[in-house]
Image (tube, rainbow, N blue to C red; front, side):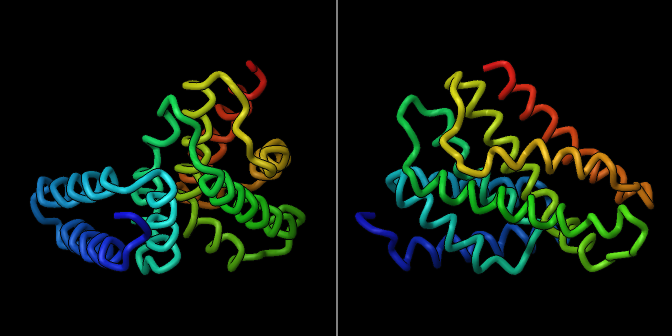
Length: 194
């Protein structure tokens, strides 16, 4: 496609629905895998800029938060390529880092004792997406041995610090927060090694 065709986005939305339905109804895993492989092949037909645009539109419209990390994963190839990713990818990653930092900052009243269940729910709803973004940045650093051109990288250290002070109220919440904490720690270690 020469531009972000509505047909590409519509086809990807149909594949997203198919992928999500296969997961929810616990169909044969190969069905979901086939849908994802088709999504990857369709993305390969698009330019890097178009890939970022398509994934951006899909993430914006996606009614399934659990599918958003898979959508971001479609862009992973842009980060390991020898070519520099388009600036719009860095803008999208920056926006997600800003959301992560804001959601963790909203947890500060929880640390001081005032319950903020809504803040925790927002963070938990987006947690896997946050881990995916942080991991993508780590992959870029490992591949290119350079700092990603993200403006919001400076917030990572504070975000990790605030996150480490959160109490882990339940096993599920604690486990998931530990996954994010671990991803942030690994990213900080990669940045420090540069």
